[in-house]
Image: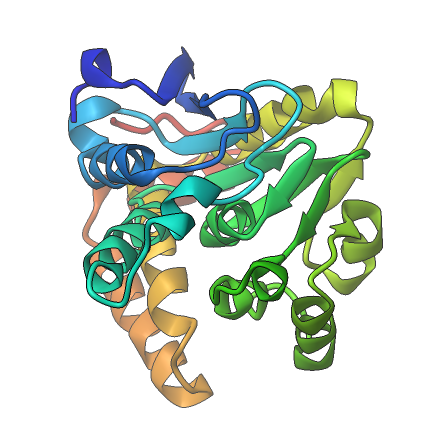
Length: 258
């Protein structure tokens, strides 16, 4: 999907960092068209944002994403559910499989689908007013618990899922689910500062690291480390690897190709 075709997403470029903002008033609840747009945008990432090394994903207005459009749940039946759910999964996986790191900058509520979107990112920074949760049980649907399991210990996941009430980001920080909680007015500034620091690295190394992290997440220790070693061997033939080593030994900033 080309940038001029976007309806629910907007982009702003700052050097090698792209800020992608979800915008579907009033609370950025996601409907079928928005799921497809997210899927297509991140699937065509290199076409849309060439040269970008990292993304900050956030929500316009008071909320990151308050969940799935409830009207679509009302229209769901056992017959049309499989196709709809496939589109939802594809949107989440497109974010997760984005070839560069993605930081979630969460303002306000990230509930259900919103939590799944944040958990599909590489890590999350929250404003002080942010809250996250899985309200699915309270409205008779399932989903997002597996995404929540990437962030929290299983007993807490189960408590939050059965309880169906959100929890403040400040409470999640101590479990490592949220990297940092900052004043709301500082959220994007802090996310951009972290993104800019990461973007100074070789674009090839960052993409290889993203591939590595996604692949080894579900692997055992020995298999995962062997996979990382293979990637090290591949990188050894790339000019950026040589430049990074030379810059370190010569005590200067590296200069990488795009």
